[in-house]
Length: 184
Image (cartoon, rainbow, N blue to C red; front, side):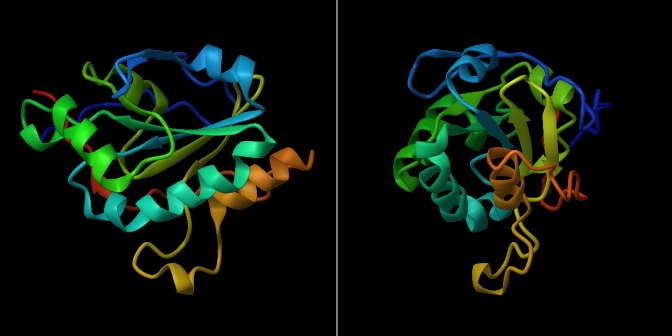
């Protein structure tokens, strides 16, 4: 595994635009999502991460809860598919089918977008408002292992605050998860 320097887009700055292929065989552009939705959550994720598997149902619940209010979640796999074949595009499609994802799952094969966002681990959340500004980044909530023991729902609270026209109270948390697999 290689550690690669990331650009690390800070909270309060503009999110990097992207043009990435999705498992639906369409090209997805962040700018188009921002034209259509009030907020977008980008989740750095991958197929084999045990933390992603612990969070996948919670992510689907977040998408279902906020979709009618103008929110879209986007999964982004920036792990190296050559280093770890379980991260290939075909395996992404199988993962999405097996877990019945209700949000787009995009492949960052060059890892440029993941680096631009400053993704370090999977899962790592980035909440972007309609103007393209990163309003939250970090953990989805404070308890990966047990959804019943969650005390702070960081991503959900940030989305709710944004939609209520309030300031996001907690704007950043240290990411917890599995390190991204960077290309050599």
